[in-house]
Structures are given as structure tokens and as C-alpha cells.
Length: 179
Image (cartoon, rainbow, N blue to C red; front, side, top):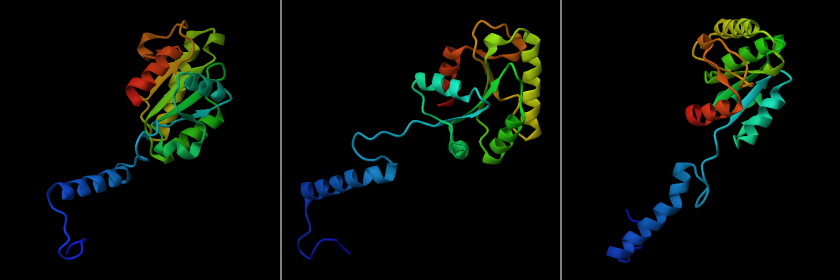
């Protein structure tokens, strides 16, 4: 069955052009793009945590990353960033957020220890790291595979902890590895 009336089928070049134009019109619908010039939206990074969330969001937006604080987007986020004030340690809201992350099914997590400039003892950071990883394990999240970072580049971190240090290395990691 043909879409053309009987005895009026296009031939040769005309048929090719009609098919090609139809393909160009349908292509954006098939690829999910909005048409010519419309690009794929940047992957979303969802930032959750304590009162330092706004500091983390500000730094990531400064690096031109697509950031949201909407927990409802955790399941589809390219990365979930947990902000934890290193001077306070893990708080009840971190436990609740880790539960929500676990329920979301997303396992791509970056845990950032903030306010490290105010932290006096590197051993406190090691203890907080251990508590955070235990919390992740408790809710069946990859504690050893989760990347950790600290916002202050000059803070001494035990090399065994393998932390990203400073905002430059944090944003570079996010851009290169996760997105």
C-alpha cells in the first residue's frame, strides 16, 4: 500500500528528497533532541547534606555544572553529592539522606567534607571518613567505591584515604569521571 495516489508515485531524485526530508523531520523525535541547535541537557548533579549544601552548590555552579538541590531527582541524577561539615561529623540528616539515596537506586556518590579549613586534627577526618563509610554500608551502598573529597586543598589527609583535595580537583573529577 502506498501513501501516494495511484499513478502519481514520485520517482528517482524526487523520491529520495521526500524520504530524506521526512527523515530530518522525524530524527529529533527519535533522538530526544528538540530539533536543530537543541542539545542534550547537561547531566544533573544533586547536592544534599547539611547546612553546607549551599556552599557546595555555589562552588559547583561556579564551575558551570548543572546542579540541583531537589532530592526528587536523585534516582536520575548523574551524581549525588553529599555535603558534610567536617567540624560536626555525620548528623542524623546524613543518615536519613543515605537512606533516601539507597532507596533511589543511584550508586554514583561523591561525599564532600566541607569547612576543613576549620578542622585542626587530621585524625578527626579519618574518624569521620570511617563513620560515613559505615553509614553507606549500613544501607547497602558502596562505601569503598564512593569517592570522598575535602574542600580545603592544604589540609593534610592520610594518603590511605585517597581524597580529592580542593575545589579544582573536585570539579575536575566530576567533569571527567562522572559526566
